[in-house]
Amino acid sequence: MSQQSSVSAQARLAVSTVIFALSPDTGAAAPSLRLPLVRRLREPGAGRWALPGGWLPVDEGLDEAAARTLHETTGLAPNYLEQLYTFGAPDRSPGERVVSVVYFALVHSDEVERAVSDENVCWFDEDHLPELAFDHRDIIDYALLRLRTKLEYSRIAHEFLGETFTMAELRGVHEAVLRKRVDPANFRRTIEASGTLVDTGERLAGTPHRPPALYRFDTSADPVTPDRILPLSRMSS
Amino acid sequence: MSQQSSVSAQARLAVSTVIFALSPDTGAAAPSLRLPLVRRLREPGAGRWALPGGWLPVDEGLDEAAARTLHETTGLAPNYLEQLYTFGAPDRSPGERVVSVVYFALVHSDEVERAVSDENVCWFDEDHLPELAFDHRDIIDYALLRLRTKLEYSRIAHEFLGETFTMAELRGVHEAVLRKRVDPANFRRTIEASGTLVDTGERLAGTPHRPPALYRFDTSADPVTPDRILPLSRMSS
DNA sequence: CCAAAAGTGTTGATCTTACACCCATGG
DNA sequence: CCATGGGTGTAAGATCAACACTTTTGG
Image 1: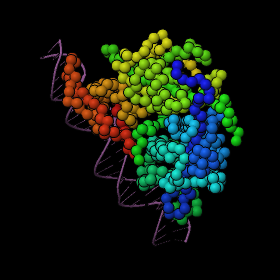
Image 2: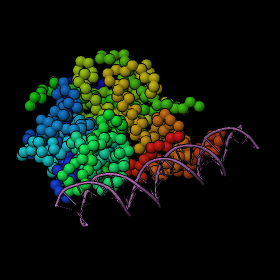
Image 3: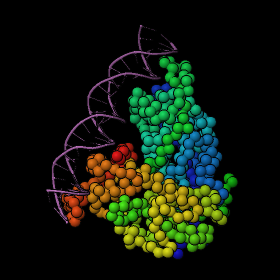
Image 4: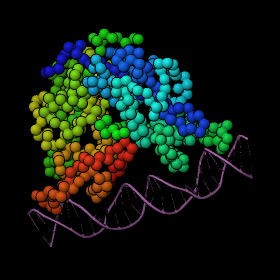
């Protein structure tokens, strides 16, 4: 056996999370995807922006570590959390070998208001990202690909929204994430046919037009859709 | 910061692989999925069967470590290798904390013949698995789910076969993995429409009936792009 | 010729897509 | 009443599933 059993010759294990939210809908402009980044204070990569995360404690589960570190660094409570991929190229961090188990999270826009936002934690639009530390740019690109792919076959759009929402809000999530217009009539029928929404019977008042129905996501009738995962090697730009 | 920066308080990183192959087609019986397991020689879990794998060396990439360890333990050269998931529950290995980056691999049947097979390395049918060490049974179940899901929207069935193959052989892969009959006529049209196969012009002689055409997978016209995944679903009867 | 697998044609059912049109509300 | 987004109807086109049918080989 060629492997070193000396503990000092090990890679260090980190957990990071790509957090997505929609920018608050400010009037006519279509909402866009945003994500929070933290400024690195130490070397390597000091001064650059990076994904929120931290080292994995020896007695903590991966999911728990992701939820904890993202909350500690951003103050956010995610609505949805899923393991994305584990990145472990030997040269991805200069100096020491770091293997990062990366998650992606979805939070709703209201959470963004309550989130920490200072000099060292800042939200960025998906297509105005700053220069990132390590391979974090590749990671975000992969997370975006996975989010977009998954939105089309799974029902996770509602995780961007609150407890109740209108059909137009849900459609807005699809349009913002997929970056394309979606026919309202056909979208409504597709969603209703999936049986994942429940009409609360209430209506959203105060709009300048006909008040839309409010829906709730039906957690009981959740059709478990296995992941459609694209290999990293197939990523295009 | 609550995290220990002492190196001794870290989890150990392992890499394991779920290797799939089809059992050689012995006459009338439909081929089934098989996978090799290795017998554990040390505690914890000594005597039980487990996935092939090993510790991650500090200077080796994850993909490389998966390819190396699966070759060292089974003698196999995989046709396809993709990261599956990282398992890291704190109690999944008694005694010490182990985080396993798990891959899944596809090899073709011919490889199986050349593979190591002795008292400590043995092939098992997917529905006749022995008692497994740690959480390896859960891992295999997840790998099977992923393989079946992926076969329907991606083009990986040919990875179970050799360089050239007949349409019936490719259909046989789908039938074996998905465990259901597939209509030959509709399957042919679906595959041909995807544009992923090239007719070699040759035919397989020696059959008792009309000699079938031999095809090759077209690596250049790779249709698996993030934006448009060709639906290969619903070709059953 | 016969049996059986290879390969093609066809048809009704279902799903998708585009868009016309009515409904309900604030102003 | 009007403008506008909410919500329904509908018909053409694409796709799917089932199965009849023709082709080609070994024996």
